[in-house]
Image (tube, rainbow, N blue to C red; front, top):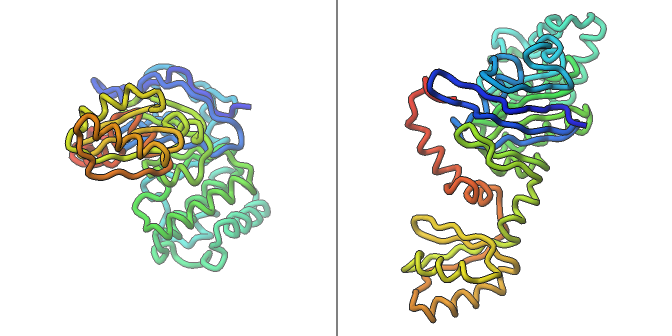
Length: 324
């Protein structure tokens, strides 16, 4: 059963098309990853799906409710954790949760029971009476996740949930996301530009860039589309080497970068001697060569022609008013 469905969903800001006719489906109960660099259209998509922005075109349904025609029903069906913190730091953890519960009309008895449940889920029971201004970054994120679960949402949207957190705290958040998906049976819609985060949490992902969905599939299938192994080669003549490699039927894909060439193959260890022998025959010197299993970074590179880190560097220079 699909709990999220979009059909040619589009958002334009004057001459800028932030989201360009995207169509996809998310199954009930899964953790779905929406991947792309900053400025790709991820947050704009979430804001439309959560009824905070009106689409310029197309349509979408959340839990069977139309985001344009049944906004109140959509809002009752979802929880949201945005990139920017939205907690009241002058209140305690339990006060933040209680305020959110009252907004959703929860009774006093049910409110207290649910607060205990979500605090336990994110391991903040012992911090419930501490003012949020004294929480660490990771604790604040966990409290926001707990708040997003207070009203039993069918879908929880997590927009860059670990942005700016250290590696250890990020992994702790991943554990809680897995836990709430398993115990609460909540569908998770996760946006991130951290490929390792998506790899750990998600089974299925979609890659968006410049407002368009480039590909959507199970992670394992996306990796297999590149090859079971990725060989990285440093050479004196990448163009000549790539031309020869493309002639081989055992080469699935090649991608040339500034300083090296990546080649998708099966049984990479067996192909390295063949590549070295071929390079010698065409008088190309190999300076370095290595083999590894493909990652989501390789998938992103294959579909966009650059790594997500390259795009992040580029987007750092985009004026804030034009970021999406």
